[in-house]
Length: 483
Image 1 (cartoon, rainbow, N blue to C red):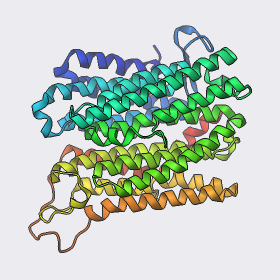
Image 2: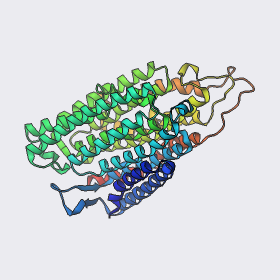
Image 3: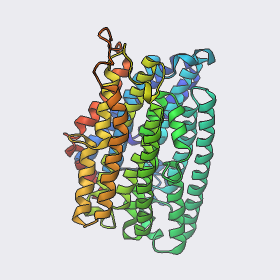
């Protein structure tokens, strides 16, 4: 059995073990997540040294068989998922999965239920990143959609259950569009492997199939105006679940959109333009929602809509010369930066809300409580999301803007800068309150006690900061995707 196959099988088998043994589910979860991260790191180093890896399951190659492909882009996504997953799993193991208010609702069973859901999510995402054909991508999305709905409903509150139902409804619509597109693609060219995507752009039926596939992916990635389900889902889930949903799960659909865009070449120009328009609209609409949000967690969820828009805009404006202009690499780097920063934010928000007893933005200042580690983690993550140096977010936006300027695409440059300014505006609403000193703080005010959540939030936020200084490594890895 190859290491590529283990990235899918190990977490899925561990999910079965965790479900069968709730008392030891935490051990199953931490062990399997750590081992998966080690395998992903090993695979990444192998890809860096020897190039892309291919594994045909059962010896059957495309277009009939299931082929796993690990090139630079896939390896980076695998490393991102397992790396963030390990840190969030450490937080979950500290029993920070649920707030104390859920103790009367069978909190222990719900905590145990987290691990099978997370491990199934990890296995499905790894299968998604490695799959070399559209049908297997659809199958991975089906597993991912069900586990994501379960994570959303984990707390069992009425608002979480309502949000989970909306998530399920949107996911079913996206899956239907995706499956219909895959079926039309097979009818048009008789194959559904990703290498055949350029053939789809040559016929009307193939173009319709691609449009349906991208539409389904747009629903699953909560791209404006198909984002209606996402803010409620991410803001009503538990902090750990929100971190996984926002940092990782939405990246699955964005990754497939990016992959199809890369494979499609010049024939994808119309769809790319539509993606760029939708991305710009999402950037503005998400920022407007974040500026109007009264709850901290809702602000972070609305900011995900805006950041998804920025990433989608980067994919859309990459153009047809994907091998040389590097703009798609900016989108991949922005995905990586967003994953680290957004996971840090949601965990930090959970800690802040626990200390204050609420997450109202207007009530973040308290005379008897000084800013703690969670507030600083939120501030560092905000720096990365805004795109200030030396973070990975800055490097991604620099590559994007530099490429757009080289093409004299000044309208898109202006939109990126406007989106950046708006992100600074809505995030400063929180940072200015969290870190503000002055007379409103009592002389006897104390810092909150340290908890695991503070360590994990700071670790994720600092990683997003330091990644900008080590951005040559992911960019070198991404170069392997073009060979």
